[in-house]
Length: 299
Image (tube, rainbow, N blue to C red; front, top):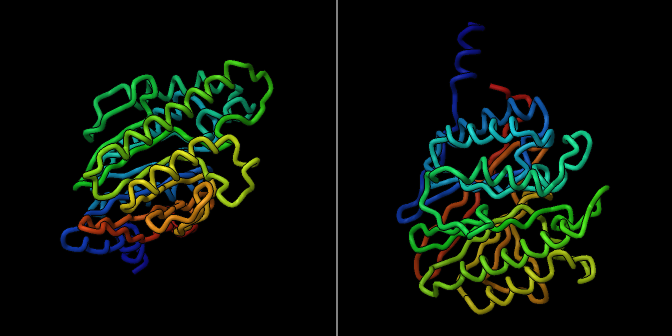
């Protein structure tokens, strides 16, 4: 009987919710796994993704905690490649911005970002995306009339947090990347025939803070607010970094906009993902289904 119980426990997979007629769904996740036990839970998460009808998966970064080695990059890349639905990944601060820390390998952050670009974005993608020249981590694609885009906007104050050995080149690179992000975000809104726009990045912008605290993100947020207000149709922002599952409509920069929704995905110690249902139409709607792997479940 014990053998039967173990077999049933190991072989059972969650019964996914059916996709409503005329809709599609995709997965959004990030900020895990960080620890060995979470790595085991992540294997369960991967089986859940493969058991679900998904058009694609968006990973908003922090694919591990440390170290920032090529071997870790390759391990995660292989995981992504083995998933049934294609993965679109935008980097988090753990895998490049914070890699100067001794426990992460004492790397130069910009050198690590260059390796991420070589390892994750050099091959042929499994989904038809357009990539930004030089900033190849920034992707854009369409699905059923909805425009999707990722931009490399990260935590650690958008890579502006001081660290030992920081140079003017690090500051200049952060400014150049942010300007490229703004340009890419504008391009996502350029198609006025799009039914909706979805923007994904890693950082958790301090929406509620005073403008001075938002300085590293302010140029991007101000430009995003202008585009959302002009676009008028539904806009969904997906990000991580804060690790708290949240669905709301915060003030982007100065105003509350009725067509704007923010999704923050869960993160460590919660190893989870969010299934996003999209029903395109005259008014495109989004619905959200949170999934978290129990902390005791390693199989």
